[in-house]
Image 1 (cartoon, rainbow, N blue to C red):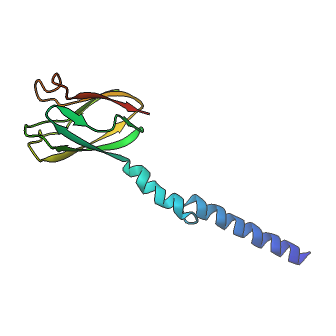
Image 2 (image 1 turned 180 degrees about the vertical axis):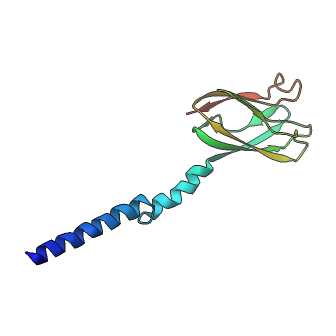
Image 3 (image 1 turned 45 degrees about the vertical axis):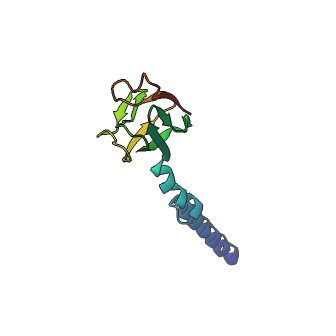
Length: 131
């Protein structure tokens, strides 16, 4: 009887160790490695030039960094507007320059455009769907 109780106590102790090591990220390396990536969010490559914006038109919700490069000859900008967000890259991007803009996107439709006067009307505008 004493051996059974000792065996049971040891097994319960091992069970607690396994549960707590998984709960604190010690036992599951896949979970521990995935957390920093999820916190980083996603990146969207963007190219702006006369008079277009080249980028995906659909992304997942969450922290998103837009990496914008001006591949045109004129100065261009990048602005996102919708769902309570209105942010733009500052300063404007001269020819060959790059910049980034980080936002936390919620599901919905956002307007992406170049805020340089007249560029939006010349076609530098698109809708971004966030799922």
